[in-house]
Length: 296
Picture (tube, rainbow, N blue to C red):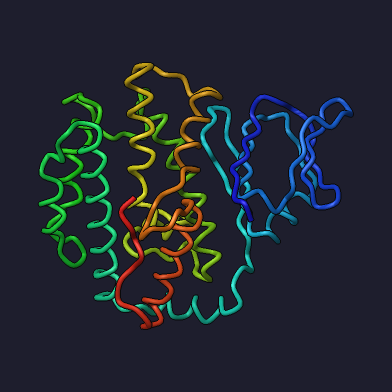
């Protein structure tokens, strides 16, 4: 799988499958086509797009996901493959019975990796990590000292050069762009989790009975700074009132399609997320102690 993210926002029409290719038809004419095996995520942002059952079925069989956006172009639903790992039921069981101390140690690793990633972004964007590298060392099991929140208080104002900025998903500023990027990242993470044979609703730290993707919310934490950096660069050029249009969404998606050099290897985010999810399954199975959360 090539793992491309395809968003359909400008064109209305019908999505169908022909000979393992995805077809977009408008007024009876085919205007775009792509092999199903090349698609990692299909994002539908146009309310006048319809699709056949075969589109969803074929994408699922290839491990792809479908993301549906609302009238504000914010992702509102996603569809994931159900059967994507040969030992899925066994991994579900081990995940469900994981002891609390183990969950706390896993969360410690996730928060530490997130703060280090934030420190890297600040260093690159502003020339200083604002002390986040030292904060990362202080994260304890379960982050009982709430170091994650302390880091956020330094991180957000520094990233956007705005002492008043706060992360608020309902705010009508650059938070809208962050929301969009995080939703796409969350969908990609959920896909990796399912591919590793884990259940996306059984979280490590996030526990919300109304959230079917708690584990995705956990695992994506160290990768959020990828979106943060993309949005910060856009805000520098356009301003905080930037509209979430096709060009902006394209830039955010491009940040998630970047390749990264890790241990001398060039890897895509899809591959990195898959390894992170697989390493968590191994931790639950007691075959390893630490997650694979590389600094990007």
